[in-house]
Image 1 (spheres, rainbow, N blue to C red):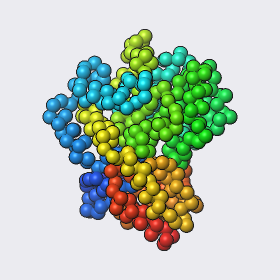
Image 2: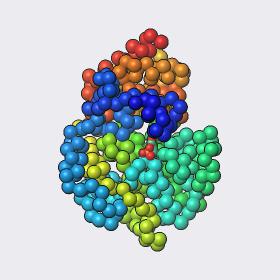
Image 3: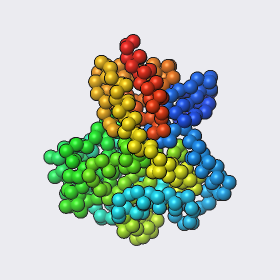
Length: 391
Ligand SMILES: Cc1ncc(COP(=O)(O)O)c(C=O)c1O
């Protein structure tokens, strides 16, 4: 299959891992040779309930028996999308009661940027250095990584950057600013948490100058940090919340939520301010609804913090210099990129899936499903420390 994969399927790197997948269940992915891999990555934080969670699978099957796609987003009343947006509203702080469902994280970011520009009538967008918000033109414009942007220039204009966690940069947010967009916890940069009440200071500054604060919860959201939304840890209330990844329970989704008043500005003058054919797809929405119900009614979020402690305890090793992040959004740092690289590749040989972070080559990504068991955590950590012992 590998030859055909490299020939027919567009590639993202010259050297993909190219594991041939047979099936996946719980915390394990199985290859076509029958080898089991313990998954410490969860599809890059997307499979929040592990693989093929029975509640997600049965919600999808039930929906398959009723109807699939019937109409472009927003025209017909479809119960799965309606129930999903209602449940999100129940758990989001007031007045964020209106959610626009789309197909991916990056589309949700695009939608949030359009909403902020449309609502404020301003154009400047301020993003943080080392941020990652997706790969379509608008999301890419938010990145300050010149090497990755250069081949695709020109991108959208009027984007400037501030240093994450630097209060001294907040004066760059002015009455010209439409939106400040931040990841609640910076992912690709190395799982960097906001410190010294940073998000609350950004919020105050945005309120003072009439700018919209957008928080990208695509990675920390939906329980991964021990709360449903990461911002709940940091005394902050955004104007727009963007979710994706873990919301879908393994199916493709994105969502941006705002007040009804703000969101209404996308549907009028001009009408059809954002449109999408498949956003809110009933099968995807059914999977997301089952996922959100499970995360919000089970003990999973509480257990996430206990599981973090277990990982920290079992990953003590002379070559692990630091573990950053919160809950099950953790990055273990070795002393250099080469060592990290070897650990990730050797782990795969030994049946443990680990991965890299986008901009931080010393970090080993540890973002398992929220449903991972304590025994599985201990086993995964044992594999990592035994590899480090040998290196
Ligand atoms: C913080 C953050 N924002 C946005 C995105 C883009 O989401 P998607 O890949 O679904 O477009 C990602 C994906 O990794 C992400 O981690």
